[in-house]
Image (cartoon, rainbow, N blue to C red; front, side, top):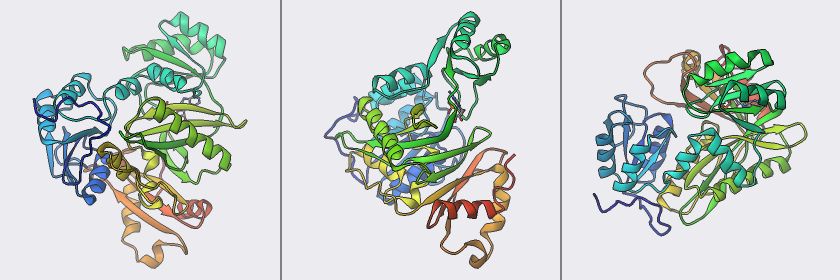
Length: 396
Ligand code: AMP
């Protein structure tokens, strides 16, 4: 075992620039983390099964192996002064090994909680924050009873493994109970039924907390999904100051109550009555925080590096209104056509569009390939620019 072992969080330990950050997962979140951390003088090693991964392309080194490969995790531990992850479904064995042989200030508890919807909801409630009414479901009869109690529509979800709307069934009538139960219970995980929230908007707030106990939140984003995939993040969110501050306060409360180290993304539903319910958490950089890259004094990626290395957190002040548009596989061609145009034809007055591409080899339909941060004098101007652009004409 190396002398870095016993990976539990240490409030006084600081990882200085020059140290090596190990990233479990080589996707776009790891890539942007490495780009940001390298600018600060850190070195990066990533573990990912796909050679030349988005993060591997910009890291000092990639270990190409399966995420469950304990030997590969051991190699990552050996090379790293601190380890983080860019996805939450990290194997418990791997987390344990990394905790024993390296320094993982984020710990394993946060992963354990956020990997499972029921545990996550209980932790949010324990922080004094509301979630949509829910019930644990262990049989079709229990589902029938809960659907009767909540009324339709309601949403049945698998407790583990779902993302971007996968592992979910919106139950619109009692007739669907059998089929919904049958289908989702094939996933061999517990199920949870949620009351359907007729939300007016979906918001998210990213909070950062460091071992020394400093907490900061980024401005709330208003998120628009298409086919359950994030399409736009609008900042400032088009809602009252009061709601924005309340959303940020709730995120801070969750970060503190759960003892988060690093980033936590908090997704919320806002109802017409001005109530906020947390939908879910992600203990990592989040797609709805990409707007921070040009629009805030500190990006979410720099903030994550600062938090896990125990540097003082950076200012989260918003510098400009911004709309982030996700670039999926079907948007790449029109984006590339746009990007080679003369500048005069690219930008409208007062609008600057900053393009980020993730270096993925294959532009598959609905695959996240990049994003564009549209900076403007107001979010309406940024939205008009997006509306007029050819990039997102194909959203199906
Ligand atoms: P999730 O995978 O839990 O983030 O859900 C994906 C999307 O489904 C959310 O962004 C919402 O648009 C919708 N959704 C999930 N749960 C509910 C709910 N309880 N009420 C209304 N809409 C929901």
